[in-house]
Length: 322
Ligand SMILES: Cc1cc2nc3c(=O)[nH]c(=O)nc-3n(C[C@H](O)[C@H](O)[C@H](O)COP(=O)(O)OP(=O)(O)OC[C@H]3O[C@@H](n4cnc5c(N)ncnc54)[C@H](O)[C@@H]3O)c2cc1C
Image (cartoon, rainbow, N blue to C red; front, side, top):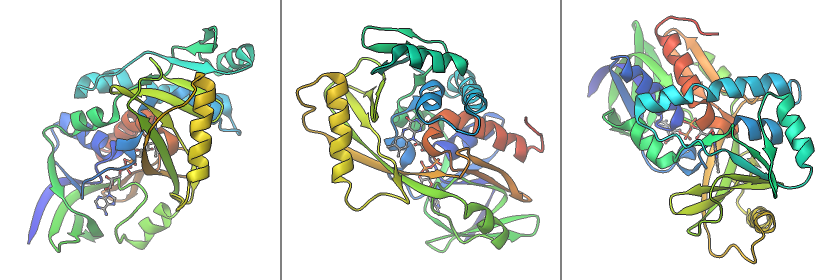
């Protein structure tokens, strides 16, 4: 059986849902296709964190330039959140650790405001969302099809998608937002998506409220989530390690020390795989006529979601962004 739609979005993580939500807000007919279940977007801590990401994971070639890019991506969030009914929590972030003056100076050099606290530094420039609630808000009212796309092929002026269950879908345009796994694609597209590499990540959820706002420290972070706290996150090159016990212990020990706790107590481990490119920025754009990429935002999928959506929608509508 073959059905048809105007725009098919493959993948319902933050990137696919953000693109679909912005397209729908502009009156476009969109079909989201995803097999369902947890993904990197749903397990993430939900930080919208240009300041701390620029400080702790700097792009060595041009730290100030990258900081400006991340800040510009963050600045799209207030309008995006309002448009799609997402609660944007602007409670800033604490740095708990040594060298407060050095941290403040480095943040200032990248254009971020920050001030001293008893434990270190407070920076009001990083925000956050609750990832599961935000995914629900972005997907509200969207037309969805549960299933895995196994092949994407040109067909006339558009595209034909084949699902694992055998059904076919014709679409005028396709957005590939499938994280780190891909259907069978035309060779020209495969050559481009081959540069996406996987970085596994896991974080610990505790039902204890350990911090009242996000805290960063050497080797990790703690972020309020629901009634509890997430402590993250590992960076596992190539994908999730089969045995990450040592990394998990180290992460919890960093958090225990930074937060001055006798023990963290029982935790539930949550994991996902981030897609990344060599330059650390998302892979977007139209690779073949009508086939658009929304992939590989590394550690910053939530931060970059509105920007990837804006660029992808502009590409589909034939507009250029800068
Ligand atoms: C532990 C951890 C903590 C993180 N914390 C943060 C944070 O605080 N802030 C931040 O900005 N980022 C954070 N990130 C990064 C962020 O989560 C990712 O960059 C982002 O979720 C990637 O989104 P995505 O839409 O590209 O991929 P995903 O969320 O992986 O979604 C891809 C979707 O595509 C679907 N799919 C795959 N193949 C197919 C197919 N063939 N057919 C149909 N569907 C398919 C999958 O089922 C999945 O639902 C974190 C990541 C991890 C792992």
